[in-house]
Length: 400
Image (tube, rainbow, N blue to C red; front, side, top):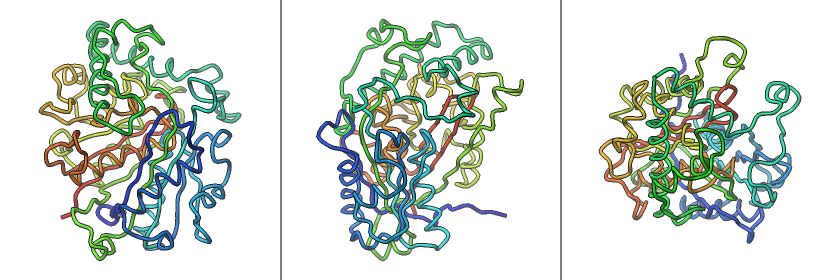
């Protein structure tokens, strides 16, 4: 029976660019910026990296097909480099590839890196569909805001939540992230906004207003992983290890059967159950110190709190309004760095950007954002739409 990779892989270096409208840098420069920070943090030389997993989602506007552009940009000569693409879960997927390679004993030191450059497209959302023939049959006219707004209708129908209460909770989600983003030097948006501004914003897809939606951005993030034994030999203290990485992908049953009521994301629940089993977590509400979740829309973050089992079903609205997920609350801080709301969403970089925040928090290096004595952090990505998507979770923690 599989036992997972808990504590078999240590993160020894991470890097993250400034996210935003990076007119000053192309994809290659962003890759190098994140990589060089990770390399310096790890305290190793480039030639010690034995394999790499490089994530990019929109290849037509980014580094291009294959891993060759990444190998060229980072001068990774002669080692295996693989290009990863798994929609918004791409960054976590790259980390999974690198971690599995180390855990298997195939390599000693591996790199995971993700990059996306979207502002050059001149389009406010994502570029033209790339979903392929089959997905276009399923989603011929869909949009991301509309797809996620439907979660709100399903959630209200199941739990009897009033439209007013749900809107207040959604506004608190966005308000919280913007309060936190002010303290993140690498965030795209660093401006606090008021509840009144959020509630009065133009509607995008009812009940999601302008401030309920994250934007696109440019950015890259990277992680260097190895075994705990090698990390120790390199002199690493306060070692961060991977407790679990899990992925769950829809087969389409949500859209073609009556097995789903539209109030939650099935794949997040499946990935969470497996991740908790791998990490040995029995009560996430008490054991997890902080979370970075895929807040592409505020309703996604609200529903995810229940899908992760941190809030009981139907209770996320109350927990959010009670400040349970606030940075200075008494619960589990969520989006301490401002999340997708403030960093924007350069797709393949987002999962690794989340891990970057958890990694720094665990090592007491988060400056003004630093939480008191965190020991276990969770990242969550959701690619696609709630009724046909990909959920990815990683759990990182201190190794004693």
